[in-house]
Image (cartoon, rainbow, N blue to C red):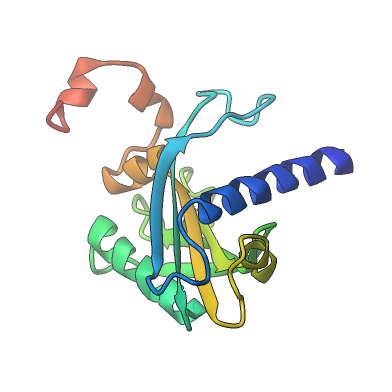
Length: 186
C-alpha cells in the first residue's frame, strides 16, 4: 500500500514538473499562470457515482509569491462563485507537491453552517485543495526556489456546480433528466 501511494505521489510530481518545464525556466522574466481543466480517474469504489469526475487545477509562479496571495485568490474566487457572504476555512493538509498545503472548506449552502445531511452535521463542505509549490518541484524544473515561488490549487468541477446551484445530490447531474438540466439554461 505504501509503495502504491509513493508511486502515485511520484507520478503527480512528475506531471507537475513536466507541465512547469514546458512553460518556462528561471531565465524567464515573466510569471507563469496556468489553469488546466481535465478529468481524473479513480480506482476502486472511491467514487461509485462516476469514475471520471471533471476537475480544474491552477498554478501561479512569480517572484515573492506568498500564502497570503494564495488565500486572497481563493477568497476572490469564492466570493464571485458563491456570493459575498461566503465563509471559508483553511485546514492544514498534505499534498506531495505543495508545502504548506491546505484543504479549503466553505460554509454549507443548505444549512448555513448549522449542520445537515449534506455537510454531515459539520456545517462545512470541502471545495478544494491548495498549497505553495514545493521548492523541489521548482528545482527539478530548473527554476530557482530562492528567487521564484508560487501556489497551486485544484477543485472538482462537479462539486463546485453542486455548491453554486445548491443541489443536494450529485447523481442529479448525471441522470440526463431534461427537467433538471433546463433549470440551468440547458
